[in-house]
Length: 288
Image (tube, rainbow, N blue to C red):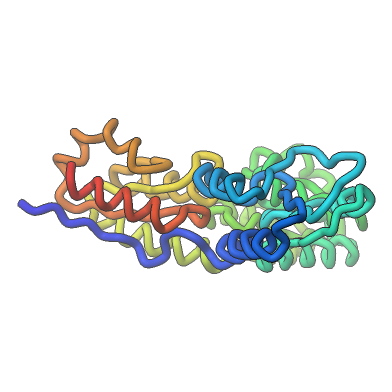
């Protein structure tokens, strides 16, 4: 029986990532004699970071006391104090925070200013969440991050006694994570305002992948293990059908037996996965 390989329509670079990568490359080509650097990885993809490095776009992990040239704020965003330090060091700052992430930051600030006890649904260590929390904490000390109902339990009394609760969500979160948290908060809050800030690209990617998984023997999720939206995608699909999470085509060799016995294979990819990496995976799946 011939193998059927389906590629999801919503696979690979989302708008925010595409914008960040293309703008960074253009900045360097327009400023060949100036230093161009990014604070942290521009996106969670090693191949893309290596390509940017080869063009002379450096990734830095700390802000130097004195900086030259252009410093890019990546798509995850940064805390206001970090942005201030970049400017103070002497860099020309280019802010490539994803527009959807900016909206979450703005909504978090709005709720904090209006006196809500703010709950950010997401992973506390994720750079996007770190930036959202830092922006909100400029206006309020009643800001917590939770990725489960269990993580909210220590704050239950404070939430119950507060007049109103506000909720924003990390853009790449799963709706399955948000739903029980909202249900719990609704049961203990006097008044609740929920801003479902999961980005439309993430929602479409997850919905389409779930439908493909239902008709597949195997789903290959392509993207970095450090990418939140990619790992969430793999987590969702593992509950539906056999799913593997790979970073590139070279990892497929480990799953050759599984691939050989799968007639219907679907391929999807995270928002930071380049099209050429996806194409290489499909080509190799066809040959195994």
